View 1 (cartoon, rainbow, N blue to C red):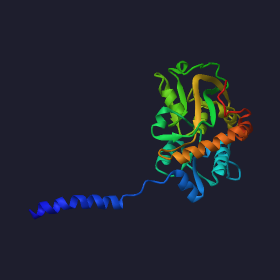
View 2: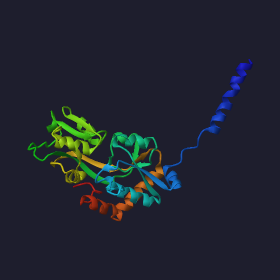
View 3: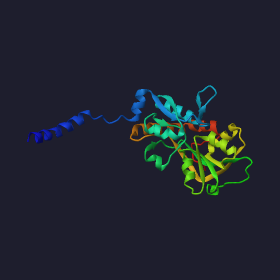
Length: 265
């Protein structure tokens, strides 16, 4: 009888104790960022012209400029955290940084676990081939039976693997698959059309641009963890302001020679 009464009495007491010790609802990311005075930004640092280390070791590139401008409009200091692409989404989910500004395509799959800003740039997938290769691969279907290089975990990785028959080879990043392409170990590679001219120019490898893949356009945004409505609005307001005053378009012209903040016609 005493045992039964003791157990019965502990139920409401335990519930009260849990209520008293349970953490309060997590603060919106905007409050956390403002309180810290910094915006922690996940970035590769090896993805020119979007982000890379200059000769002096400082990060440069289109995404770096965009991230700095967004942080300035939030009234905080940008702090960059470099990480490999293959682990960058996991790093965001784990809270290693607040956002990623690294050409992350907005996809339905990613939106299931992350929130995104409005798009800040638009692009499309394009093939790269050897300069002396006379073959013209005008679609992914044309690559069936051939070896195609992509960055591991990228949107292009998934795009290529969705077409049966392509021998998809994954690499840590562009430098690795470009070397294999030049050496003839793969037949083509796939990447963002905005960076291909830069890659070919700076790689000093005998490569050329191939076909732009129709129907493979991308909208690129800034991802962050779900459940932060105030932060979502602040990021969108910052990007809207940059579009309206022309500063986002000027950054795109600086790096690409065209305004990539609007969908291509």
